[in-house]
Length: 181
Image (cartoon, rainbow, N blue to C red; front, top):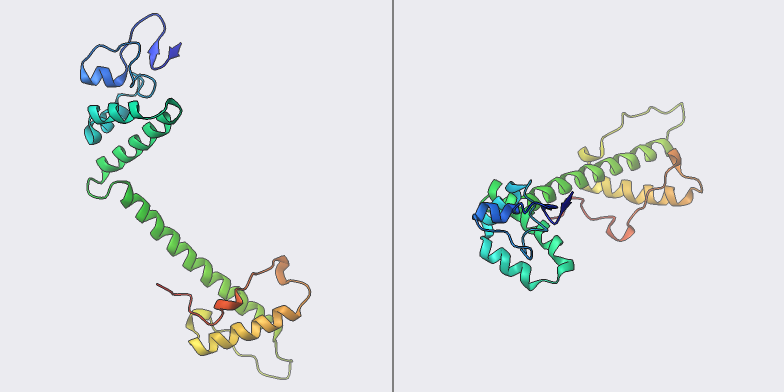
């Protein structure tokens, strides 16, 4: 059975002591967080932060916070190994760009749903000629503003929602562009 990174009975050094080639004592600050079977975990942390700095950080923290601190150091160290310049900031930036792209796609899809609802609500009678639908991203700003204003009036006058879903419309930002930077 493992207890604190060591096997019971035998004094197997933790990954930190094994890498540092020193004897692992019973009160080793590294042992609970860097078990012997995960040497790469301490290896990357040692490479980025240094064993002395990690030791100081862990000793300054209360025991209940050390596990989270080690997880953060391991994450940052692995990110720094992959990207020495930006580290985890580069990963966060990449994820933020993905979120921005997905939010833009969602806004366009919502605008298209509003446009389709408008076309469905304002279907001309059978004796008038019907024009093909124009995608919202091809419409000009003034026509898209008119579309949003008229859709807001028509949707608010309806008591039941189309397609079984409600759409929240931010009336304060109705005339503003979706592309704000």
